[in-house]
Every structure is written in structure tokens, then in C-alpha cells.
Image (cartoon, rainbow, N blue to C red; front, side, top):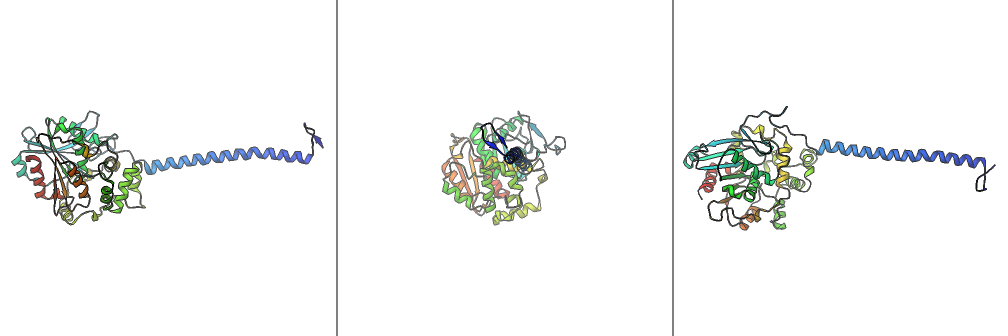
Length: 374
């Protein structure tokens, strides 16, 4: 038997037990710490893998770069170093009376073919310029792309090609949101504007909540989900568009339910004579063209269309908005609302027409004549 410093007796058995307890405590504490560290490291590793494998988009395959697609179209270099690919048609710009820049829509390019007759081109002396928006076709991706940069790209393209102080713009569907940007940021450069079946952002602050909610509710369920993901969680878009659990965007999977009967007739015609160059639309990566396009369009804008002032207060030009009555992709109620709030817009709701109305030769000619001569 021993006596400790406090004078208490300590038996050999209790001393041995105390020693065993002390020895066991340290390894237990070390094991707990090690397990926690391993758990944290594993969690971080899994999250890192998930981000790289599922959320982070792959790097773009830039045209003209090592391993990227070849450059086959004329291009201009912008002030920030990017290139925009373009295509010119019609009368030579030096002799043309009217110069029109056509802005393509979602999953399209400068190579889209519109039914514009040579007779009309010659009659009105029209020069046509189409270009690939950033990330599409052969135009460089733009990591800092925004609603405003769309207008600035158009302005700089016009200057590089020496179109003069003013030009006309015609935007199709998703390609119409750059035109709202033009009306906001470069109105002094515009001679006239045609918004054809123009894109709508359900989260524009100018819309009454009930109106936008009802309009969004008319879309296919899969599109409603996709638009909400794009707006509320843009960092999830790459994963959402590639996951297999839920159906994502209807138009990218070829769901024909989005088309009205008039559109289906036009689809048949277009299928018989597909536009050349369609294989180049996504060649630099789907994120840089399709997904980034949606993220910007459905994001939070710096302005609402109803805040734009009349670019032609002296009637020196005109703005037209064309809406198909039977359009199942763009709700007519939302574009009607904008036209009511902006009386300087000439609103045209076309009966028995859907989203593809401009591919009807008669409608296409009417749209161009109204733009240039009204």
C-alpha cells in the first residue's frame, strides 16, 4: 500500500487501474480527432468532386484555338480581344438604302435562313448582316457576358463593318432580349427595331405578380422547373440540363408539344430544307451558348422594359413587336402588357400564327416592310 501526496492511501490495484485509465484516455482522444479530420477531408473531397464532375461546366472549345473547331467564317475582333463571326447578304452596304442587323435566337446562329426574297431585297435596296452571338457558332465565348454586353457587341460589330451612325435591328425570340438592351443602352444608333416573338423574363419587375405567375403556369411543367432553376440557382444549370432524373428544357429534347398547329406546318417545311451550319451552333460547348444565354436572359436585369423611353420622339423611326396569337413558347399576355405600357411600340398580334411566324414568307415580308417603311 502507498500513500499519495494528499495523504490518502492508494492500493496497488487502484494505482494500476488509474494508470490504465490514463493510458486509455490519450489514444481515445487522438482517435476521435483523427476520425473527425478524416470525415471533414472526405466531405470536402466529395463536394469538390461533385463540383468538378457535376456543377462546373467543361472549358469551352474555342474556335481557332489548339484542339478547337476551325474558323470558316469572316470575323471581326472586338476591343476586348474576342471575335464575332458574321455573314453579309443582300445589296452591298456602300449602296444599300437600309442596313439591317438580324439577331438570332436560342440554339441558332448567323446561318439561319429566313424567307426573304431577292425581289424584296432589290426593291428596297436592303443589306443584311447576321452574326453569331457570343459563344454560338464561331464567335468567342464571353465569360462576362451580360444583357448590356449584347447591345455593345452589336454596336461594335456595326462600327467595325462601317455601317454608319444608324442601323436597323431585328431580333428573333431569345434574340430579342439583346434588342431591349439596344433600346436601353444604344438608342441613338437605332434607325428602327423589330421584336419578333420576343423573349419574356417572368421575373421582370414590371409584370404584375399574378400575370407572370399565370403565364408561367401555362408552360410545360418541365420548362417551368427549368426556368426556375435558371433564375434562382444559375450555378446549378449545367447539372440540371445534364441530369437524368427530371426532364429539363423541352426545346432541347425535341418535344413537339411546344408547337402550335401553324408551327408544326412550318417545322415540316424547315425539316425538308434544313439550314446549313446548324452543326456549328453548339460546337464550342453548350454552356457558353445555350446555358449562359438562359442564365443572362432569365436573370435579374438592371432595368425593366417599361423603364425604356421612346427612342424616336420625333417619329424618325419605329419599334414593332410581333406576336403570334397561337404561340405556345412566348405567352402573348406578357407581350401585350408591355405594348400597353409602352404606347410608342406598334404591337402586331398575328392570328393563326405561332412562334415560327417569320418563317412564313408572307409574314416575313410584312415584318420587313413595316420595319423599313412605316
